Length: 181
Image 1 (cartoon, rainbow, N blue to C red):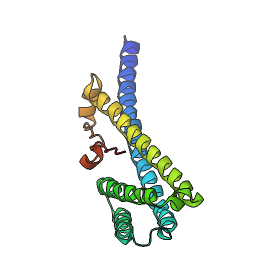
Image 2: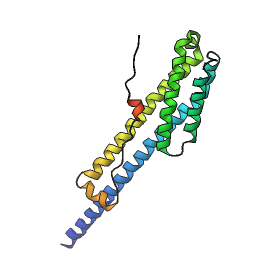
Image 3: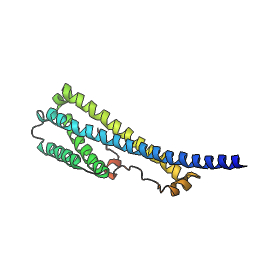
Image 4: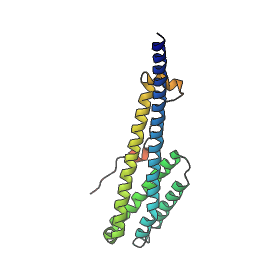
């Protein structure tokens, strides 16, 4: 009988440890995926000066767009919180679209090897940002499922763990792009 009580107590302790560790692992996965988004944002911001230099020679009279991109990059680099980085990153992304649109007016720029390389690099970074955002939200889904399903919700309450918010896309990025021929 004593052996059964000890075994039951050990099982209960083991269950508490397992659930605690699951919460820790999922929270670390969320932090890591958020950090990966930040890394990709930084790579994009670091690419901007090179892209600007490539475009400057061809589009000297496009000063307004150059200024907008420079301001957007500066604002992004000055962002402190992840929410600010997401907002400022969206502004930088919008400004970069203007730079890429300049290429349509300058056939020599479109053919420039440096510009093409930078444009491909920027597209790759944007894909990585999208993937990192998806990974973050998938991590949030796993965590939230654990906090809302039985018996995880009991342990979530016990360990003071609450459901987390998903990373949302700013409203301006949700607009359907207009394609004109």
